[in-house]
Image 1 (cartoon, one colour):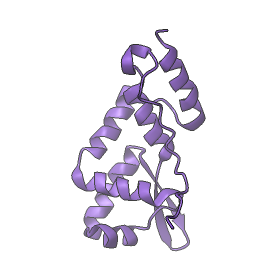
Image 2 (cartoon, helix red, strand yellow):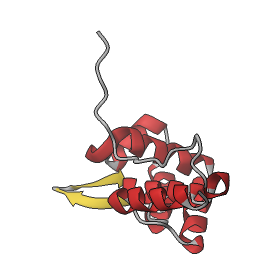
Image 3 (tube, one colour):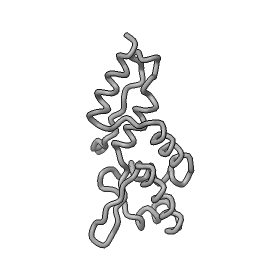
Length: 132
């Protein structure tokens, strides 16, 4: 059954993401290897498809606008985040396809290609249920 996990992973990845190559994975991992960028990326993931403006992120994370701008550019350069003008504001969003692609890259050969406990991650945000 060698390769069964990889084939399943590639099929699921084709639905949700692309498989990163070594260079892309290194750029993404390098971007996340800095504490402030990791915090920013996690905030973007939590925000989901609505994204966040730099002002909201600066306030939420307590970062100076110049530092935030630098880190957002690095996340965008690594393809983990995207930016889109929305009226007079810029909205940054986590790129969930890129995040899924990184996860697929990291788990591609998990458990020697056999089915295992690590399931491929489809990272598109799912609406959470409100607790009563």
